[in-house]
Amino acid sequence: MSYKEVQRSKSEKGTRVIAIINQKGGVGKSTTAVNLAAALGELNRKTLIVDFDPQGNTTSGFGIDKEELTQDVYNALLHDVPAEELIEDTICKKVFVIPATIQLAGAEIELVSAMARETRLKDLLEPVIEDFDFVLIDCPPSLGLLTINALAAADSVLIPIQCEYYALEGVTKLLESMRMVKGRINRNLGTFGVLMTMFDSRTSLSRQVVDEVRSYFGNIAFKTVIPRSVKVSEAPSYGMPVLKYSPNNKGSRAYMNLAREVIKRA
Image (cartoon, rainbow, N blue to C red; front, side):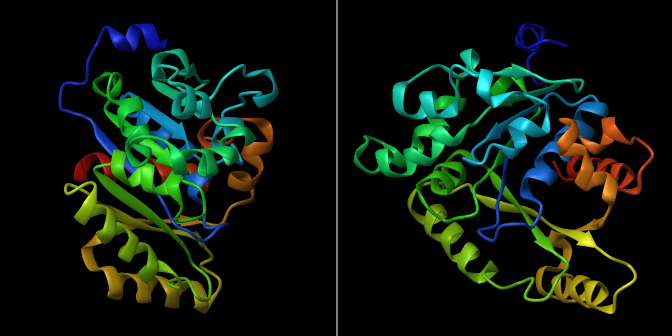
């Protein structure tokens, strides 16, 4: 399905806009964005990913060559390029991407003096949002203006937490930032779910972290836990989600289970 076909069939149940966020790096934000989107597409949900991280890992995770892009989300934020001109088809059914390149790193500084600087992304998405069942925003590992834009545009957040020591470190700061945005910019912002990633069943530490996160967040934590997997780590180097690279892998099965949970919660 191309984006033109998507435009002819609006979402019937409304769109969920979910920011995937944690200011810590290396917790699986981009991996979650790519593979959750692919799984939602497999379950017949039209999904748009906004790559909002200057590293552009979500963009390359779908095999999109960043060197060949003439414009990306940076051009939309700073030069008012319409979203529909940026949306790229992917190798996955019903999954589309607004790409990012290293250009986006400059937006953090350039937005400081811009009008309506906190709502640029929200304004960008407004004309296309009804074309999709889900919009996932892959946030950078920081709490700067890009992340604030993502929180202003989203109706909820998904927080990946790595199953390692100090897993909850910094989460309090993140929740404080969410409360600030909710109080001043986006009163509808909520927590969609907390996802535990890189779980290693062989270690007692991973099991302890799962227990700690479930104790802290309760029912907000997803039942699905994403396991460590070589195939999940390898897939981005081939420019595809693990569901395409290794459909029967335990990571693929876990992301399909996560997508079912996401659909149920939505």
